Image 1 (cartoon, helix red, strand yellow):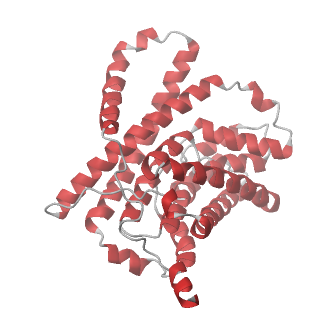
Image 2: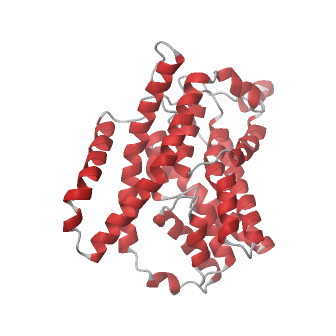
Image 3: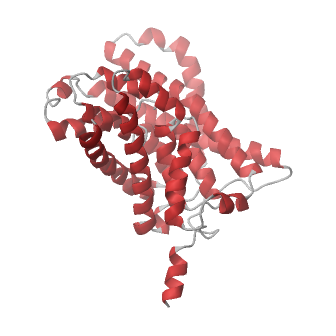
Length: 337
């Protein structure tokens, strides 16, 4: 009996039937296509109507989020489709350690070598799970990739030229959160909470499988990106900026507030360091929380994660990630900043 329990804990590849069902409602691709058409037509039809400052701000934020995120989303979809079509499942068995508790930090550290935005990490993590990677390891990669990749590290160094420890702090705190979340999910997660997206069945050559997987993921993830962009743009207009200045001097509260602000603003991880540097009224630890939480939990990511892995996953994964992001930022900030 003990041997069987140990064996159960060390299984690294989920069963083929674990949580697998269609990842997207049939209507969602058509909604995405409709929104793309409306965006193109709106440039000429709706622009004269947007006279009110609030509407202009809303439209600017929404378009900026979608335009900023779409190239990275496409990159992630291409990479995910390539993984699905050209990388055999046996590769991941050889590349990652067999023990899942060791595979989690290895997958988290692998995020340092892949330039990309948080929108790219969701379809890539989805593709990894679909190919048999331990979900906890794929989730660690999902969290670490947009926060510790080379582009983000360089951008943070440029934004904080007089604070090199901010770069070190962001890297260490982000990797720590990714690994901790992966371990917690591995220990307490349940198969019914996570929907591993199905993939279009392979038909013909690998290039046909690549095309089908790319089309499937792009229509799926793109629809939820638009939903997240709409929500973020609305909250950007609704939340008064005066609320921020009133809490900047309160140590713990300011950290939580900037963490929530990162969720609401939904800024791409390649650009968020410049926004954080502009928040001069806040402490370095609060700015660190902004940089750690943003690439892991924001409105467009929540929409993408809920659409890809299911609402049961999102309502557990998002609070866990946010809480560990805040706690880890405070701890790392106290030591390094």
